[in-house]
Image 1 (cartoon, rainbow, N blue to C red):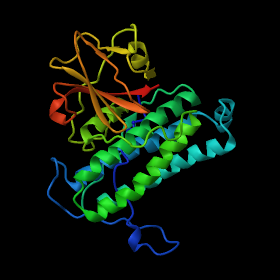
Image 2 (cartoon, rainbow, N blue to C red; image 1 turned 90 degrees about the horizontal axis):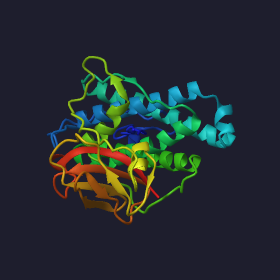
Image 3 (spheres, helix red, strand yellow; image 1 turned 30 degrees about the vertical axis):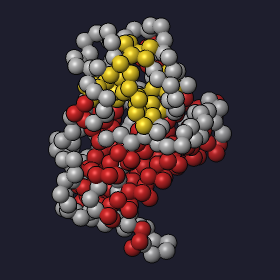
Image 4 (cartoon, rainbow, N blue to C red; image 1 turned 135 degrees about the horizontal axis):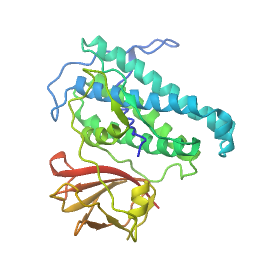
Length: 310
């Protein structure tokens, strides 16, 4: 949710159950059915995870627009329409928060509370760059969590949010000057990988609002070196054939760099702390260090880190 991350938008799940809404009325959230946990996570766990991500995203836009007036966005090259559209994303995120709060509370559970965040954006362009990453992570979070949802009502509602998240991502890409739709497919990420990205923005959470999810160790890249290491370190662009160099002291056991992008996963052998960026990567790319050619939780040693494929 670097960011944008995100934040994760872990926009993962939930929302109003539109089938019961009357025309012109506010959608009413429905309590999720209690079901056996999937992959160790119940529907309530997933909703709490989604709320954690939504809190983060809502805070991101609220803090950004409080810090930078519209005139600064326009000075950075955005139109009035661009600024209004970005502000509408923040409003959507706030609505997602209130909907999730109601749905979780109606189930009898105590919703997680907002945390204290640190986004480190220094100007409107940096904010938009982070938003681009966060929105990509949020959509990937939904795709990864959807198969774990047991309740058909919750899954149905999740799809109504996923389509909005995709629109958010496209809008932010346009505002950042990127191709609106870079690929034919989006990339799913599991809850632990998403939380690992989101946790980099979280400074502290109220007691009782810490998710029962442990983030993976972060990937640390070496100092600028030939190839893509410098770009990776700065969260910028990499291209096929670049070399990524990991910093000394990274967790032991890594044998591959996994590159998750549109259409699937690719693996590059990790030797002496170096691995090569493969062909055919597009848009946001999630890089992980793994001990086998798999991106399941049991195979991940560190990551993910978000890179932009050029």
